[in-house]
Length: 291
View 1 (spheres, one colour):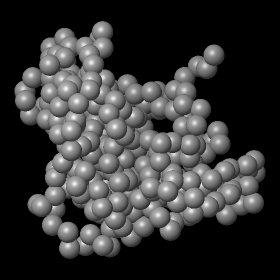
View 2 (tube, rainbow, N blue to C red):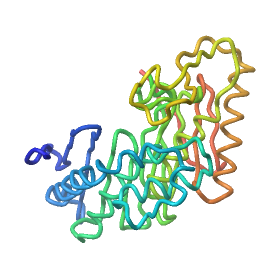
View 3 (cartoon, rainbow, N blue to C red):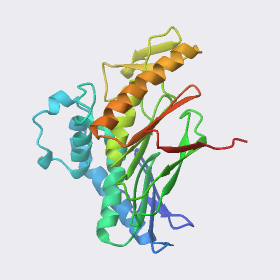
């Protein structure tokens, strides 16, 4: 059973939910003023969705080929989002868990927007952000980290309004999940956070290169409960040559372009050991002064 209200309201009106694997910051505003009740509604939706997903964890942690005949209408909404998003990658080595954080963020945002109680919603699930800004003229400024392991905001990304972008997600080596690539960080923009979440993982995986500096191991050697048992993940990255770093970022960029051209994502920013690449060329990304 979920304990009574395992979340709290912050001074600025946001609601913070830290429960199980979820670490959520939920912000809801109406006409420029915080609406804590709307944010709390989102927290309640997150808790209910989490309980609904628990009986379906075997499916959530299954590789896509085994879910080929799984009926989405029989699944809880959050699992349906996870499966639908990951299927677009067309990679049999993925499980729906690649989109779990983004799918929860989307579900919460949709619940708050549907209630009509807020015209500005931001749901941050450990860095995977789903948002809705009613005013199409309003741009959103987002802090971006170039190294997940360091965890410091180094860049500012401006997301224009009125283009249907409602999701941002970041993946890479040193994050909450295991990585099969060597990207320091990959941030993706998409129409939904679930799509951005799955794509960020995929692009980060494509930055892998063979090198004596890159040590790998079976995923279960690091996490016995991993959903990618039997696959190899990156365990440690030593000093890389510039040629190796360039090769890794070029690999990731090529995959990002494929996903962008297919319409799955709207843009991406890739970082590998201090090098940065982004697409499209019009993406508004700026480096911030560092102390």
